Length: 138
Image (cartoon, rainbow, N blue to C red; front, top):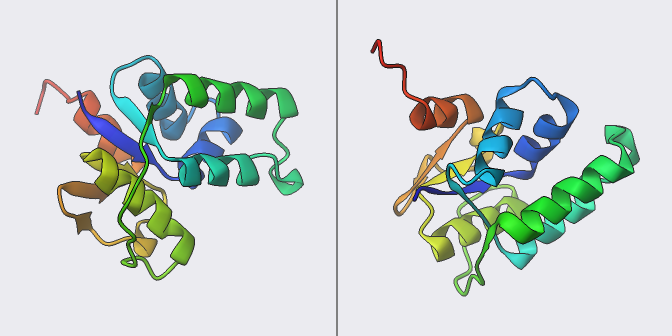
């Protein structure tokens, strides 16, 4: 099964825009189409960012999303420190990807990440959705 780490901005977009590509990615992960991977540091980032007042997300929606991730995601404990991203907090996502041998790190902000880290490719939600649901006409 494909393993993928979701950057926080993908979750924010998924919750803010119900008919969006990030929401479809999140739904597919929670449904088991691919395996969402989290580490304690990644989950802490989700818990810190999602309730921010400026996002105007309903507290129940945030709590439900976090609970679904808590119970459906594959948890890993990274042991290696990574310093590849110029945005230091993003290194926690890279560490999670490496520890889980995730095929993908999905982000809406690729400039903060290397294009690839080992076997993990950094891609956007639309590109990931195209991988999950290839167009038979191509």
